[in-house]
Figure 1 (cartoon, helix red, strand yellow):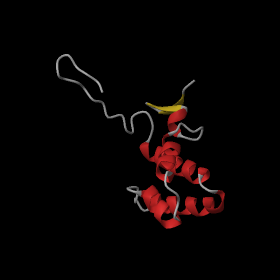
Figure 2 (cartoon, rainbow, N blue to C red):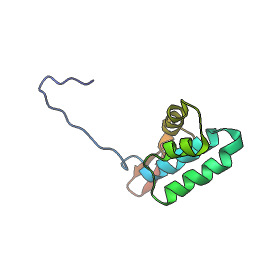
Figure 3 (cartoon, one colour):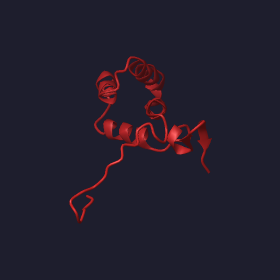
Length: 105
């Protein structure tokens, strides 16, 4: 919790500022599919890609868990993998610049 001496604060919404959020979503879905059980990885990728393409991003992981009867704890695992900095994640090594993307050391 952040405490303010004055009772005021400024909140910055940085979605799509440092990287395109949609690129992060796609790469996060790919990371989750790649980290899934080997026996269903290909199907996970197809289902998550389909949800992505159709704009069905809300509860995407819960739908996959129900569809494939994944065990308790699967949601927390999927969210952790989705949020983890991946080499392929756009946020892990790039930032937006005026004329396009710029590599960050």
